[in-house]
Image (cartoon, rainbow, N blue to C red):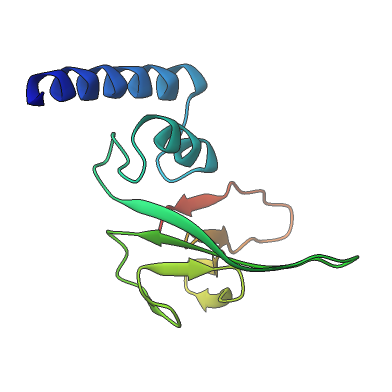
Length: 128
């Protein structure tokens, strides 16, 4: 039984790696979460970290209200739901010497660099 599971696990990892390569998927992205879900949820088979999502509240209507949270095993963030949990109502901006950092609802830190007039930039995303 263990040998069969082990062979199956290796096959799923191989499939996951191939999908990530073909789709040029970055770790921590929504595509990565989808592939992880399809091939090894709750463990990201590439990084080894555990992740999960949960919807705690969903109110329908013209302006839908939904409380969805995401948990990463390697996140050190201590939020209202405890260590590693992130949600869209716990977002913030912080001004640093490097630019503005936006903590997104899924736990990613996104840096917006400071610009001089006429400059352009790219966005730098830290998965969490």
